[in-house]
Image (tube, rainbow, N blue to C red; front, side, top):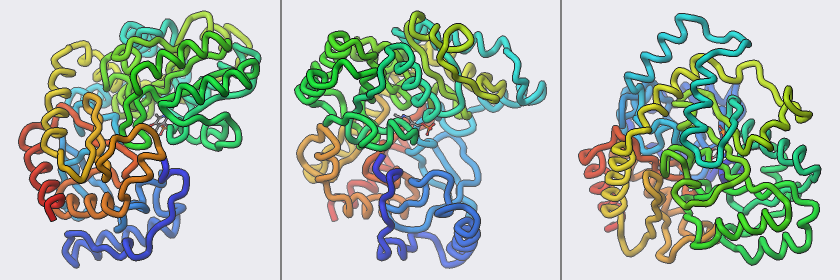
Length: 421
Ligand SMILES: Cc1ncc(COP(=O)(O)O)c(C=O)c1O
């Protein structure tokens, strides 16, 4: 995700005052000043600083379904949904109840719990390639651990990844010089790299539907080619389904596209809105992990009781295909309403990006070639109309079941007003 890799703030845009009244600004500005005094950049994750779209971020106070309220009492239709985890919207009553009940019994034990087993069973039943799974606390940790396991299993060191895909901030997966990097959707480039370095390759790591360059679907045959090239080289194929898992289908992109990776990285929806992520795959590979095998991996809060309770409250309801039908319908209505000759709307199920260019986006170079300033203006226009979308072009709208025709209509109206201007 480009912003997380250090986009600089545009001073002119930063002076933007949004739609808030002067009184609102005073409250928000004061907290923002305090935040920057004690937290680097004022935020605990860079994209939250709105560096690439301008303005000073609001501070969230509460959420309810499709809506988010800030500390100044302004309400927004929220298409960010915490960057994807909240498939049933904010403060979903079943999740809240499950977490409350779990908390009353203790917030962490550092000993195995039955709920961890239930969640692992749920994940293994849902995700086609996952026979065994280990729970961790963040997507970064899950991706990092999957790489460590791929290295341990293959006895090799190198990783092949794709420009513009994001897998958290572990060095190997963030710093391009630490890995072989190919353009997304370019199977020929992967084939060349495998020909040259195949014997050193531990894994090919990919977002099967890219979400961190904006939404970019895999070209027909791309994922199949990665499967074949992994097999030919002996490298493990690792799907990072932190965004796509339980979103583009219950079984993630691997269910939707029918390609099975060796390892899968999960997060976001899989944690039901709490800090929980996972990595899983073939039993033969997963059994290399300690204490069964030699690859050490551990975590004090792994399989945390509150997080597993939230995850189960969400994942069990995702057995119902009607949920995915509803997400698809809402996503399709939003996509249809946002179409305009100046933009390209790319959508897979309930994840969608409006790119400010008229040609399709196949990789991060295409995404960068769009009009990023205009995206910033689009963000600010929607915000002024009480609609919160990702404060970066290289992200997605996330549809939840809490978004209905009213939220779609309001968003489309404001967006079309902007696009007509
Ligand atoms: C595809 C993908 N992988 C990994 C991560 C890292 O997850 P986390 O932010 O939970 O560390 C993200 C975060 O957005 C992601 O989108």
